[in-house]
Image (cartoon, rainbow, N blue to C red):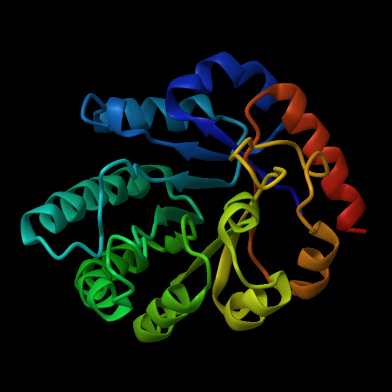
Length: 251
């Protein structure tokens, strides 16, 4: 198993010699600031640069977007952005595309049902489009302090093409339930892992083992689960540390 390493689109050229030398699988992040300036030709050029044929995943834009929005206009903008991401995915053919859930219990006053209704309207047509391309969708936990909303979404979608992305750092910051309980409710839906560490007071994206997330329990609970392993490091040095430490857990 070779992990994916998270790289922003605009940083690919900076790290290209390193990723080619190491023949790294990549998660390409398309941020909101640069997204509207990209064309299909740009994405084709990116695919051609990655001439060592890595397995890919994509991290979609997320700032200000709300797939479960009550406001129809907000949801329409979100849907348009996500359809455009899938158009790029049709060129790169990633294994998965990761999207943020957009759920915040304070914003929705704890009304998971309201968020879920809007989310299903967003994800059902997007998932059909993705499945037709052979590209999976994975929804990432961000501010969730429990897994129930994500579990409900995956259950209602009822699609092998649609799953969850479990982010270790976000869990460490926000969860109010144990790791065993969270994974027990969601592991059947997990399609991707975002692996990084922190000490529960900021989203530092530290290398595996430099914070206090319980990776021993994570890999014990997910043994046998076929999913993408993505290292979300912020430097080459941190990526190297996580790659080496991940090997110890995968023995």
